[in-house]
Length: 428
Image 1 (cartoon, rainbow, N blue to C red):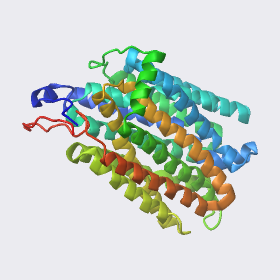
Image 2: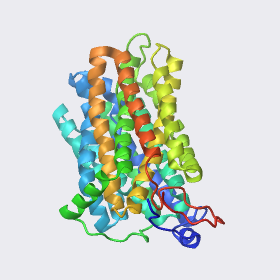
Image 3: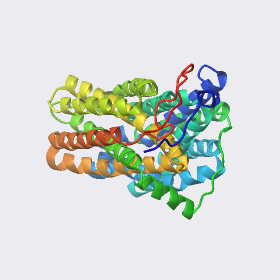
Image 4: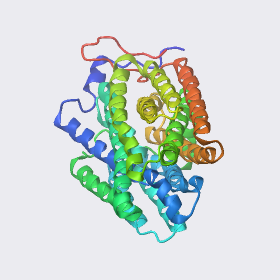
């Protein structure tokens, strides 16, 4: 294909907030805190699934719906919030999302019945949609092109820490004071992070409002469906999240039974592998800025597959190492893919907020469907069946990563030129 556009070094280097500045640190810290809050609240019930199953008299598969219904609510809301952010801006949605979701989290702690808890968790998922819908689009608009993949990696690191904090905090508090105080503790963490975001997050300066509505939304959706790279990225989001959710929804039940027989607090310590994801997401972002996203993405798939297979033997050390590798591979893949979507969409002339929302819609639908399937698989085939399901999803990830390597490059769909690089960037 002919050259699509040329980006001169001067224009690329003058755009956006640069690393090392006070404004850059405010952006990164604020979105890190927002990521912690969002994912602590989202996964606050995952460590509690065995306890919730026992307290409410539901099966392991049914208890998983306390997470699946939240991700479904989040996925559905993304289809509205993403296009809305292209009209009203990013920062107000981030503030509203983190605060409102924390308040609903407090209400979840007071739920009198299982249906009430499920309904509130659905509402919490809707409230949570504001941050993931706009975070990567905000970073693309506000930061220097050469630091965007790195910053997305740091944001994803915050989501990793939040996911770990939500699971560890609720697991420990639940064993001491019950599931209600466990959910309340996650909500209070969310409110604290919301205060940090309110103080630090700079208002958008690079945002330009775009028309929204059904016609505009359908136009972006059609454009995405005609871009093989975006379709592959959406599939990667669904399958990557499916792998992680399948394993983490069922590992608590495995650790509670033979041969491990661990209590809730001890079993929740397995989520201490999450800091590995913080490191790999940030590292993958830096490598993607330097070597390109197409090079880094398949490496994360390989790491995840090795991790899945290591969890198969009935060995606690191997299980922990295997989960650590799965988390490392997942966050490398998700960190690169989620940052790639708005860049690819912008290069193709599509609304970045809506494109990011379509990616996350696929991501959370994958979490909901594969998470529920994982619970059913555990009931039918135990841990070996769970491993087969997770490994199959990783194989699909690898195939999609290879598809991406063969797609044409658009304007900014590659690392931005480093300072002093005199070569214009073109697409091939």
